[in-house]
Length: 221
Image 1 (cartoon, rainbow, N blue to C red):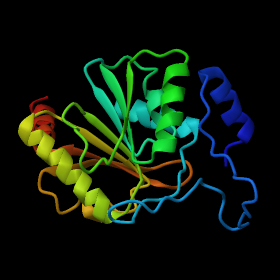
Image 2: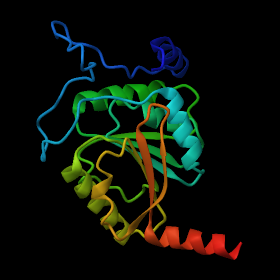
Image 3: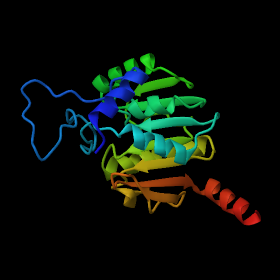
């Protein structure tokens, strides 16, 4: 487990704050670390408590996915914006965070505005990722933000955006607990899988034409 001091140092350098605060009077369960408030006003009732990823792990996955200057990075279920802020320190066309819960959106907006070392513009959208406009996205990041029903609806939303605007995309699913919901999708193929230092599975998926083109290029080489 990474030291809280490391997190504090990163947040101080970045000028953001993304650690959840424990409400007054809340009794902690010693077997369940505090992950923020649980919201129930969602369609499928399969959202999870707010949590985020350690800075070391975020930097690692950004090195793996290698976003370029023409990419639009979308964090689906961005919470307080830690991942999208760290992504925006790389030169990209745009970084977008989409979050359902307005209190988290407001914090993410403050973090985006105060971020030091920003190299890409950040847009925070307060809305449902299953219905939001995803037509700009080329890299989609999910840190297990919801259950299989909302995940399927979100994938259908991405697929619909590809019909309107064909393009190559990558989906990076961190802690891919419900990867079985992506397996039957014939327009997506898994291209990489590994475990984070904490043992959580990470899977990367690409849309079928992009994966076929890459395989053809590799064979030609």
